[in-house]
Amino acid sequence: MTAAFAVLAEPARRRILGLLLVAERPVGELVSELGLSQPGVSKHLRVLREAELVEVRRDAQQRIYALRPEPLAELDAWLEPYRRLWSRRLDALEDHLDKEQTP
Amino acid sequence: MTAAFAVLAEPARRRILGLLLVAERPVGELVSELGLSQPGVSKHLRVLREAELVEVRRDAQQRIYALRPEPLAELDAWLEPYRRLWSRRLDALEDHLDKEQTP
DNA sequence: GATGAATATTCCCTTTCTCGTATATAGCTG
DNA sequence: CAGCTATATACGAGAAAGGGAATATTCATC
Picture 1 (cartoon, rainbow over the protein chains, first blue to last red):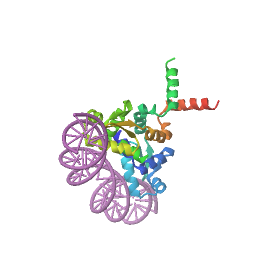
Picture 2 (tube, each protein chain N blue to C red):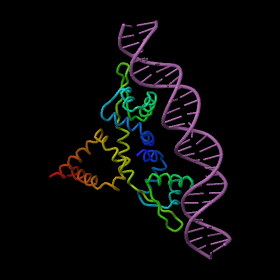
Picture 3 (spheres, rainbow over the protein chains, first blue to last red):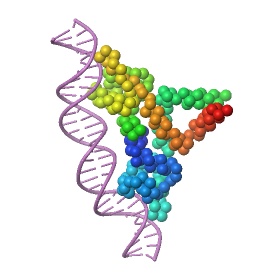
Picture 4 (cartoon, protein in one colour):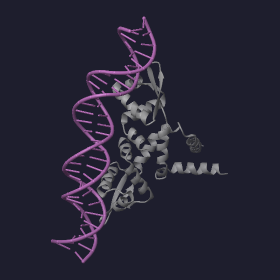
């Protein structure tokens, strides 16, 4: 949890996740789309990897990075108890679903 | 957004928010419940205040801290596009509400 | 106005992050 | 296996963060 927040505190890393949400990508593509140095991107990717926010796959000499949603789901869960503070809509939703589950 | 993530990366600060979710509290109460030094707690509170995650109210010589949910709501919104990656339940919910809104 | 309680701020030290530049590794291709 | 491409790591510098100890501020009370 702590790790996930710290990792996401970096704008560049959030941008990387945004790109990977659209589609998985090799490092070079991230470099050109982000406008950062290649070592810089690699380093951010290492941090994201260690936090399990992304995973790598080798394709010849390229490394294809893809999103791993688990830590984001944890973050979402952490947010849960706070949601009632702003979300009427979600409350209604949950009420509805709860009723649906216990007929 | 960046600020919110950075602030929440500190476990002590998340604990403070957890306590304030239950009820607003003076600093002294936070100090005893967290087991941290008073200056330490005050410093975390300053950071939380600057990120607008909490607000202060004076009550005699005490300062009562309370939660301000806005930055958490922003975080929730940031998470939105990623949610489909893990949440079937939420998708169902949104579908339901969307239909409800456009009868 | 002095005292005491509650809270904030400052200073100093150590650690951690980020960035740039340079260098290393891994794997294809001829 | 030489050379090229794609990616990763190492190193050094500078900024920022966290924690402890000491000090300052604020307000109520006597």
